Each structure stands twice: as C-alpha cells, then as structure tokens.
Length: 289
Image (cartoon, rainbow, N blue to C red; front, side):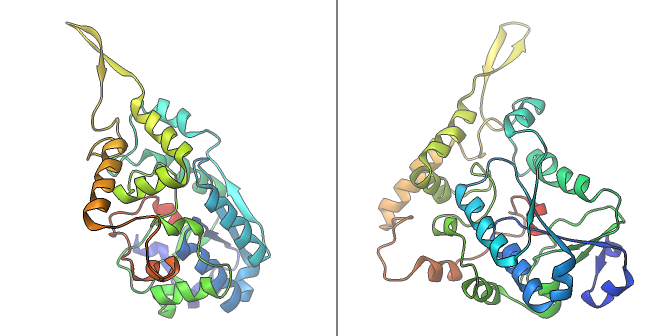
C-alpha cells in the first residue's frame, strides 16, 4: 500500500499519468480543488475533477457543486453506478448498509471511480489535512498513486475554512450536518437525523420508509415470518424515529435547539469549533480522494 503514495515533488516522474481529484461536496475536497487551482495552476490544467453521484445526495450538495464548478472554471465530471439505491438494496437482500457492511460505498462510490480511471496510470489528489490521523480511500491498484497536498504543505482545519471563506463559502448543509454524503447516511448522529427531519422532511420520510419495509424469511415451522431489527434499521441504536425522539429529549434537557441556536454566533463560526468525525467514522472513504 505504501508504494501507492507519492509526494508532490515526484509528480514529474509520471509524465503520462492522468490527474484526478474527487469532490465529495464536503469542505476538505472542495478546498483542495481551490488550493490546487490557486497554488498549482499547471496541475489544475491537467486535473479531472469528478463527483460520484449516488442519486441520494442533498440538494445543498448539488447547489454547492455548481458554485464550485463555476469557481474552478472546469467541469466537475459526474460519475454514477448506473443504478439507484433501491436496485443495490435489492441486490443485497434488503439489508441496509452499515459501518460493518459498507456495500453502498463499494458499489456506488468506489466501483464507478475505478471504472472511470480503468487501467490508466493515475495520480489521485486526496484532501486529508496535516492535522488528521487518517488516510482516506487509497486504491490497491498499482496504477493509482495517491498524493496528499495538504499534508505536505502543512495545511490544517483553520486553513481549509479560510480557503472556502475567501472563495465559494461553506456548504449550507453544515448548518445542521457534519458530513457530506447521502441523506440517509448511517453514520449520522441523532441530532443530524433530527436536522434531516426538520430541513428535509420528505427525505426523512423516505429514509423512514426504507426501515418500515416488510421483510420476511421462511421458517420451516411457521412459513413466511416478518423480520426486523439491526440490519433493517439505519442505526444499531434503533429506528430513526427512536433516534429523533432521543435527540428531541436531549434538546429539551439541555435547552438546545439544534437547527436554530439562540446565539449571536454565526453557524460558520460554530462549525469551526466542532470536532471532526472520528477517523473510523468516515461515511464514504472515496469522498476523501
């Protein structure tokens, strides 16, 4: 795996390589694209920016991609598995994805990317910061080389916010959510499910209906019997209705309104003080390309 990493200074050794940068719709990958454009203009000319679309992203992400595309002055190529989430759910026996079974990442993010690059020699720019302890998605294919400009140049969290504030701004969904990705992401915290219900009630209801589907299995004694529980809810902690109820209870106990804090502090400033996800709590690792 270590052989798949490169430094920026050694890029000249790969004269015929394609250069790609995956945009997740989140702050780090967007900031990296802008950083490459501003600090490495010769590389920017070569880079193929891309976004892997599951069809289940928030509207705010698509709006932010349009704004970023205009700023970069280059197309952000849209990739897709060619099938929607319902199809892949059926192919996985109606078993909802989880931290232990990330089939959605594999089928709807990683496979489209690896089909996009094929067997070409590729340099992949990854938006991991110097103050993070994770690697993101690094392909096992020998033809895909990973570089980490932020790490090499020493950029940390505050630098990323500065880059965005000086250009396209911070994605709007960060007002109530700590991550990019699908609206039903199983890594969402209780307060984020509550945020989804308040900001996109129709999407919350769609996520809820995935949990409420009637699923059965055959029992030799009783025939077809219904099944539910872990694997058929988005979280091992219970249904999203239960998670939202817990978040609402916590709000009342602490006097917090998750999506409308009674404070003069702007949400952008609040976001800067929030902790990143745990390194193991990364929804779609390909988004960290």
